[in-house]
Length: 86
Image 1 (cartoon, one colour):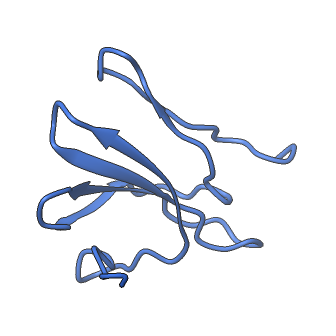
Image 2 (image 1 turned 180 degrees about the horizontal axis):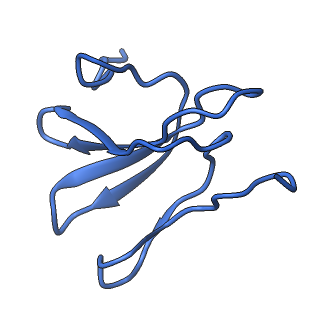
């Protein structure tokens, strides 16, 4: 059985959740939102993993956000900003 964890923050909705990254130091989950195959949109969501509450952590437009990583120290978040030669 699947249970809905999070849909957005009340003002914006996660459209196409893609890559999850767990930040155990801050007890949160970062999720890239691929938004749309043809149109750029926001971005990266930060959600508290116990409640699902949260919002857009990176609200600027990304074109099909796909990959993310968290550094070993938990101090840096990385994701590709340009995909498919854009």
